[in-house]
Image (cartoon, rainbow, N blue to C red; front, side):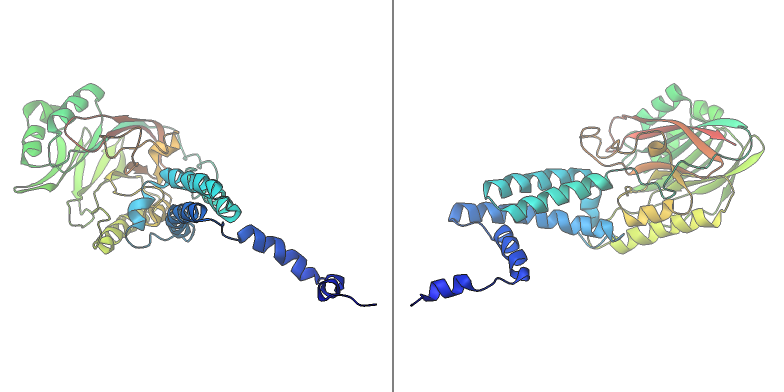
Amino acid sequence: METTVAEDRAAEPVHPVRRLVRPVRRFARPPRGRARQVAAWCAALPLAVVSVVLGCRAADSDGITPVPQLLAFLPWLLVPALLGLVLAAAARWPLGCAWALAAAAVTGWFIQPYDPAAGPAPRPRGPVVAQVRVLTANLEFGGATKGLVGAVRREDPDLVSVQECDTRCAAALDAPAMRETYPYRKVIAVPGDAAHGSAILSKYPLTPEAGVSGKLAMPGAVVRIAGRPVHVQVAHPMPPMPGRLDVWRTELGRLRAYAADRGDEPTLIAGDFNATQDHAAFRSLLDTGMRDSAPAVGRARTPSWPSVTAPALGAQIDHVLVSEALRPRAARFLDLPNTDHRALLVDLDLH
């Protein structure tokens, strides 16, 4: 009896590994047809970008340009991930659909507030000895000076951290009414360099101390509140510009060293950090035990920059970080005219 070659092959047993591989190959097979192939390529491009950024986030690295810039807007990676899902579905590309769903799921996971302690913050030791209100504002080359003065009068903060304080800003802060309210201060303003200047204003006695060095002024001081010395530091590291990432990392590293060197002493760092919780350099700063006030009271993803699109779209790069002795009670972002940042107002309990 004769049999054909096809019948002989059909009679051969199929190895178990081949049974597993064949469905995977069919699943991963690129779509046929020119239109579907184009859709698949259009899906792969945004998914590849999202995957690189998420890979750096998972690896606790800020990577190279443009990764640090994209990390600032990490929640918005959901948009290209979902776009990739739509295009992969149109291309009838199962692997692409799975890729897009995985990218969206990982993005969603990282959107959670970063908590290095992985639990509730430890309760500070001792009773509350003072309630302190802190305001931090980047004035964008001094343009929001008038708005800052108005906010100070309305909100009556006890401590004010100012970034990009130009000579106009310094003159406004030196006005008699401001000096009466804030007799203690440290103001640095450089003529011709509006971005460089910074200031600390205080209702409490203030002793200047060496601040953190950087391209932009970051003054520091020791403020005595209810008999307790509190270290206060302005934050304004350089932004993560292409070609200048090393400066950004170095200056954030200096702020981290400042926090680490203070140990258990009450410490407050307020300003424009040019970094979000999705940047490894900023998370390293939080790992010293400092707590980010806005996320601590449920405002983890409220954008502070750029003000033209916030709060609908933006990144939270303005922060008030506090050590264990200072416990956040409330936080609000304020809109000031003529600046690309929103101011941040935080109420704290000093234990």
